[in-house]
Length: 281
Ligand SMILES: [Fe+2]
Ligand SMILES: [Fe+2]
Image 1 (cartoon, helix red, strand yellow):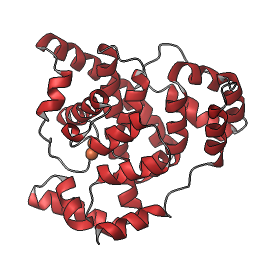
Image 2 (tube, helix red, strand yellow):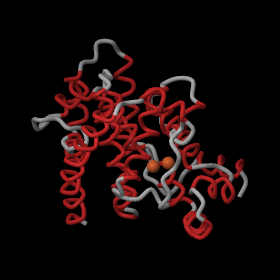
Image 3 (tube, protein in one colour):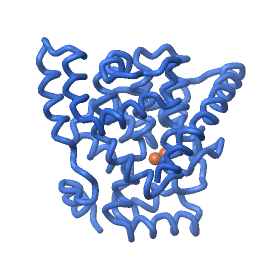
Image 4 (cartoon, protein in one colour):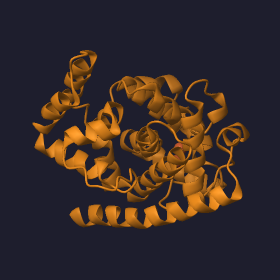
């Protein structure tokens, strides 16, 4: 398959549920300065299934709020519109992921958790946005698997047999990496740049010009979560850490110890969360 063929295929992805119409309605509402969180919340809450899904996500341990968030209005105030919108747009992707690849789902939740911990320590204004970037960073893999299942299996088998990172084999077999694919889709879905860029550059953080800090955090969190062995990104290799990304987020030994301790605790809570999902299926 050539790059061009793949790009045109991504223009009309068939295998994934489309963006719910509610998202364009919400986008329009946000353009209007008079729109309040309460009004947005009311529109979302009309859809009870969506509301239940959203509340479950925002209350999961990777966002780490001490109190339970019980209304969409609260979720919008605490997490911001960008995060809620991304969760709405990608909720169908997560359903596909939970059903088809629970270990990739765990990898994504783990990356979201690590990214949130680091973002909070760095005093980033909206650490939930960073967690959300971690959550969706490998969305290109889900799309690949759903759209081109044969090629995806070949990619994974090749990566294992030849001991190559998945993204190298992706380039060889479909002409594009999952990060590029994810970037294209996130752009199509009108997600904000603060989420598109880390998805697109999480394996090549030195190449991005904007949102470098969040991209560096996602790059590092992806590696960290592989290193601690939570879930699976598809191949067993821990990729090398990019120097530039490390220069941005560099921390000392005592910080590292605290980060790992916090991660350990949160991952244990996450195991409960994914366990619940297993039982629901
Ligand atoms: Fe990746
Ligand atoms: Fe990953």
